[in-house]
Image (cartoon, rainbow, N blue to C red; front, side):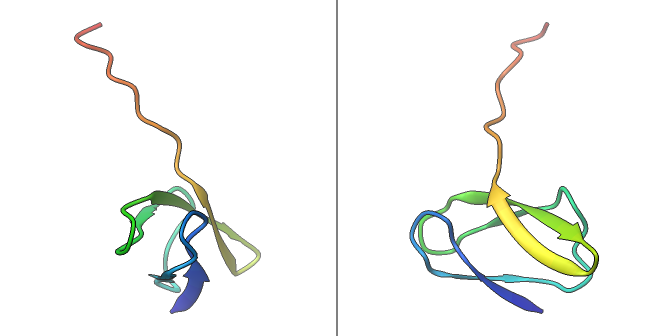
Length: 57
């Protein structure tokens, strides 16, 4: 398990070692969603993109 810091409030976020790129993890402290990025067995996180409503398009 990787312990990373929230990019907003700096609280700890635990990410499973088996996590795959594109998974979303949420900070328990502030609720910010982060997108997991895995490259060469190194796990990192980035702010998750906002999902926009399509309203039936």
